[in-house]
Length: 342
Image 1: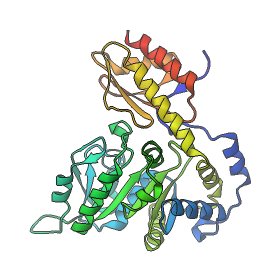
Image 2 (image 1 turned 90 degrees about the vertical axis):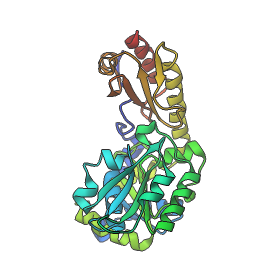
Image 3 (image 1 turned 90 degrees about the horizontal axis):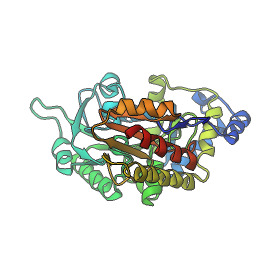
Image 4 (image 1 turned 60 degrees about the vertical axis):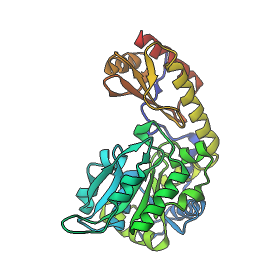
């Protein structure tokens, strides 16, 4: 059997032929001088989709999150984050290292933060306690199985933050997936946070890039902080072009990814002793538990059969669907997994 069915992440996608052509033909300029028309077109389009005034193209989602945290706070303050969030666990303590912030994790389940914990944690400085002035929410939530945080919950969090005089940042690395799975308009997400970050290089399949969205003054300052963090870019239209192209018809592509993820979940759990760590599967991420088996050994057995996944715990593996896996890859993964867990 030739080829590899790569379910490690939706970041492993290769640019399509159309994306490569768009890269080759992109009209470019120096983006530090805001002279790149391809970048400007992307930023204006995305800002309009979210109903906001402006947007800023950034190299990565992590940088977008960190720029927002830097602008919404000052050193010595705290930021509320979910206890299994990307900002807390997978950004190299950037809140502390880059902005002098202390992360204050609160309990969450399927990306939903405990409202009472958030309300009690967002506070002004008092006595010897630091002010807690930023709330970051992740949607979809990667390590809760690609769960979609309901719009009503985001609105409730926004209300609490406003009451407490705090800012809200939405880590929407896979917000496109959330919008498709829930039918929520992007403008609705744009209204529940002071800033929003969304990635092009995950579910949308672009080779690189994310975008930070907010008010005009915020984005003006964000451009300066991007430079401070080493993200000033020059003829960057060559990567903005495929990112912009990825927005064409993305809804149907992501819906297909979600369907394939559910088929994986159904097929995996048909095996004895196999269950889902998080259910239901709403988007493109599946965490599967093979009770009593060694996940690392299963990962190795799958790889020998040209199927790639990631062991994330002693008996848990993660599979992520994306535009570079098709129905045949799903069937191969199910067959290989069944052999591996026998």
